[in-house]
Image (cartoon, rainbow, N blue to C red; front, side, top):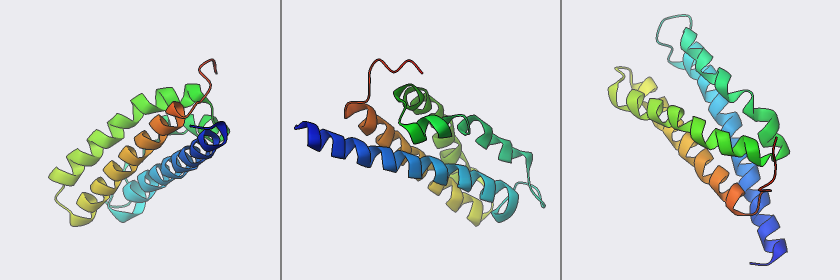
Length: 125
């Protein structure tokens, strides 16, 4: 693979990761405050987005270290998506669970693609 092709792929993976991460954060806010909260008026479960917030600056800057730890963290969101998609009583919440799973898997694929396409292996922070 040529270096220009590798750079183009890395740019595409990076953009996909940024989009997926921001969409996952937006989904968490909308889901737990307005669309289908566990309790009327909102739920403290919205705080599940807090672990994603420190990842935003590193992902926007393309920091390999951030991509690495984010790849481990996002499996909690995938697990929650599957759990709520299969067990919630409200149809809206089940649908949002599938969307959360899809965004988590998309984010993982983009993170893996970004790292495999040549992200710095010496990026300490």
